[in-house]
Image (tube, rainbow, N blue to C red; front, side, top):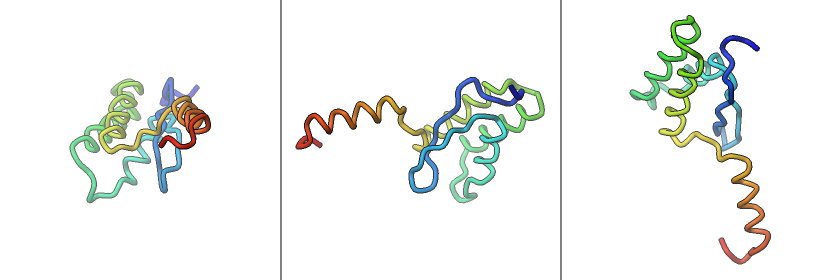
Length: 99
């Protein structure tokens, strides 16, 4: 396993709401670098600095993961867990008239 890999990926929504897994510090760093400048805030800055520090071996990848996940949560980017999606789908199938 590469040294910048996360123990567990961070699932985020990208583009038109498609889920993607951020599996490493480098993946998180790339996502943060591509984040529009007009939407950057303190959470973005902290996560970007943490990813940079992790890439340089100054902090643990899991620390950067936590800060990236916090950034994603603040910006409503976290994808719902697949078991939550499956439960909602099953609920709709059992009671299609309920929304």
